[in-house]
Structures are given as structure tokens and as C-alpha cells.
Image 1 (cartoon, rainbow, N blue to C red):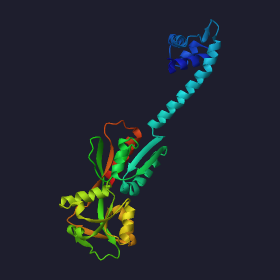
Image 2: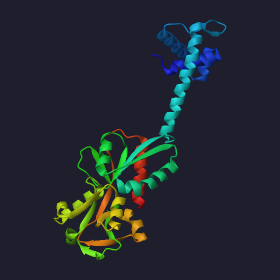
Image 3: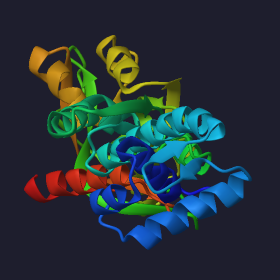
Image 4: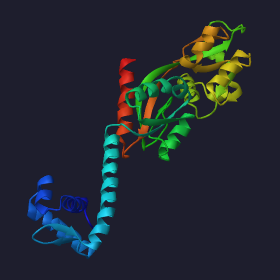
Length: 298
């Protein structure tokens, strides 16, 4: 198979009509240039250059090969330029995933900051529950995720990222006192996220620390998004746990009220998650460092 070096040498000899001048232009010796042309001709099985004392001329086959060789070299050089762009993050793609809270309230800001520095990177974000994001990693459909809970896996790496706090909210008209004991939850109608969501997993684990099973609660409604939980609570359909980030606007607007729960640890870590032992792109690694930098400055 012909090499790019051989093709480049052939084109230079054809353009300059001289082995000596081509060797000087390519910073090679004349014997090295001659050896590359000879090897190229042996590979093709036809003479490409007529050699005489006066000047270098292309054979008929050489003239046809020259046109294609120029195109090959142009495509190769363009490909190398593109690869250099990828190395410098001037272009590329980054597929991200996030569970609801980081996906709706944090990641858009982090992605925006990243793209200000690397505007050539096309970033996509899939938002779903923690289980879905881990599945997408397994399927190699995303490069990295940010989720609200850890799941058991030997193949996925979880790195603590930022700390979130879950808050219990009730409707603005509710007569629930502003502070309750965690055992009072047993007598309340609860609105929860769907199974598999980071918020629900975190609440379940916190209750388990107090020997309360999720089945002990009076769950009247399971909803597929945090905003749906807030809307249900504001309508007086029950109380629910949501992220402090998600509740902030509704609390300020006065459509819901926060209820402090004594004896329950409602702080949780958000995690950066990615596949172990998989070949990472430089784009993913740079974005990972971007996120970790945000965690340090938080």
C-alpha cells in the first residue's frame, strides 16, 4: 500500500520537475526521494516518472495518478486539520445526561459556561431519572451524567459533586405547622416522584435510617417530574419532598410553604457518573474538569 509520504514525494517531484529540488523542499536527501518514488511505482506496477538527464517528465500513467494523488493529499491534509481541531476542542460532540434536578436547574448553566470557552463543541443533554441516565451510560449513548443518587454497579464510577438539600413542601393554605417530627409524615398524604428518581431514592434512604419503610407512608400520587410534584402540592393534594433548587421559585411566589422535618437528614450528594475503564474523549475529560472546578468553587 502506498504511503502518504510516497504520494507527497511524487507530487513534489512532479511539481518541481526535479528530484534535487523536491528533496530540498521536503528536507530529505535525493536518494531517499528516489527510493520513495521507486517504491511507489513498484506498488502500482507502472512507471510514473520518465527519468533523463535534462528534466523529469510524467508518464501517461503518471499524469493520471498525479490528479488523484493531489486529491488524496488534499483530503488527508483536511482530515489532519480536523483532528487538530478536535485536539484543541475547536469542534466535536459531547452527549450528556442528568437526572431531573441537575438537568433542569444546574446543567444548562454549566453547559453554557463550557460552550463560552469551547463554542465549537456541540452539546446535547438528556434529562431523565437516575436509572435512565445509568442505562444510557451502559448503552454508550452519553459520555457523562450528573445524578441525584448512587446505584449499585461495578461498571460505573460515581464522584460526589455538589450537595443538594431536599425540603418538604405543603400548599400555602395548608394548616400543617412550619416544623414537624419525621414520625408525623406517617399520617400525611404524600406526593412522590416516580420509582427510580434520585429524589425518591434519597428520601427512602433517609427514612430507612429512622426505621421507616416507604410502604409505611400514605403515598397518594406518584408523578414523573419535580414540577408536577410542586404543582400537586400547591393544589393541596398532599405534601412532597423536592430539591431546594426546584422549590425556590415557588417558595418565593408564596404558592407553597416549606416545612422543617426534625430528625431526618435531608441532605444528599449529587454525583458525576461515567463508565469505568472506557476510552474517554478529550472533550469529556475537559468537561469533567469543568464540573469539578465548579464543585470546588461552590
